[in-house]
Length: 126
Image 1 (tube, rainbow, N blue to C red):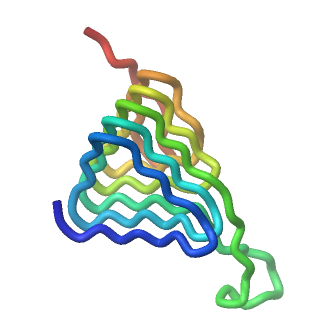
Image 2 (cartoon, helix red, strand yellow):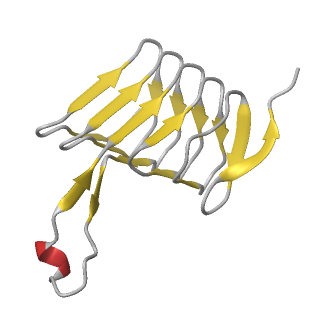
């Protein structure tokens, strides 16, 4: 739908079928793994990053080693605008991530998650 930034140096990015990825999304899988399932919707300005800078005292930030991990997004997930997903997170099947959330932990299947850090605020219903 617009600019999409994919970074997979020394890592792996997998994207399933029938996904919609909106404008200005960053998929940063350098040194790690990002797996996006089928029928996933990703809103604009979302950032998925499998690496974080170290923060050890006594070492300049720009010289810190990266800590690498994985992001797994299962099928039928909606990630709304301006969401950040950090390393070592699984967004379970059917989950909804509300706009502006920062996802630092795994979600439950069919849950609705919001906030900083994101937490379950409800469940999807018929």
